[in-house]
Length: 187
Length: 295
Image 1: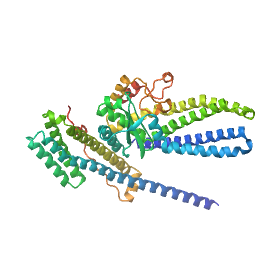
Image 2 (image 1 turned 30 degrees about the horizontal axis):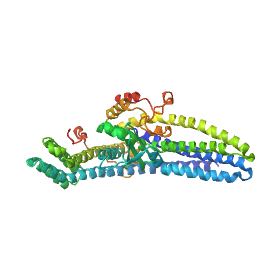
Image 3 (image 1 turned 135 degrees about the horizontal axis):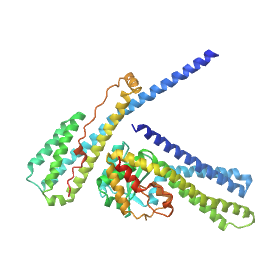
Image 4 (image 1 turned 135 degrees about the vertical axis):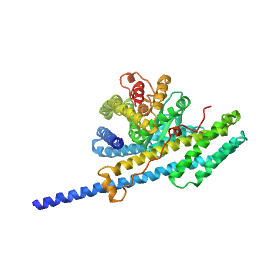
């Protein structure tokens, strides 16, 4: 009688332990996947921004032919971005492109007709929307990493992470404070 | 981190929604049973079955079409992608920040400044804002308001709030039917029935709105503070939301053309009524601003 009782408790404890392991491992895997997924969110927005560049250059050229250096800078930044392959390179090239775009909009300030053009205003809104989305996507990426790091570096999560070889702490993307501001220049 | 309370909030909301569904089911079945007893006790069980079927239909309808009902009663229309590009951009950005799919975007033609979110879960959600809000707020203020609504979606506040809004309407309809059946009901064998119906009708007409009001009160205030806080955590800029609230407090007249039954889903109280002075569904705007400024 006593032995059966003991075995019963033992089985219950084992089941509970297995359940805890399964829950934790699933959580670690899900959180890890979320990091990958949130990186692709950033990537999508960076790509959208790069796709808008030729259009923007064409529009601005129509009004401001002589600003060659600005167009070159932004076109170069775009092709650098296209060449980048790792997330870190892409993020870096993306920052350069953001800076180049800023100077395009700064130049546009000197051309009232350009600023008044509907096409330009649409592009400006679209780009500042994308800048906002990139900032939020980065924020979510970093949040995902924070949640992941919290679980794989604290007890008991770190034990389960070690079980499936996921001890690596992921590193954050830097967000410069100036990037939180949209590229749009005041009218 | 806030992660734990976040999940608590979601499961609390889901539990409340389920309780609400059960409550409505029970009330409708009991009502049907009473009607059955009055008409013919020998077939009362048929009434129970019919009542149960109607209740299930209504609950499923509230669950699957509640967002459409709420959107159409508030006069919200889909926001054009081109015309309201910056609104779409802001909603898209905050959906990314919250890690949920982009909600559908609607606008309400009103000079009052307000907004709401509705839907059954983050995968089926909508955000509506008034044109007055769009015309008055700058980008960071608009982001503050949308961030607030986005966190309602993230916490699944929207499902419970939608349930209440739709089922309030249902109770109003049922009590109306009871009162009508009394007025036009005549004949000898329905005399007793008439008396019972008027009692049920009156009770529903008087008590139900009070109960609903109490539920609205119980859930709303705390929820708004919470959504302010987690909305600010999404935008990382509490001052945007604070300044939006200040503008709204100065501008709004509280004369939006919406029923009291849906007032609790709005960002700020859409209609200032006498009863609001005592029991508002929304916390005072100055209080919300103060908390945000202190963050």
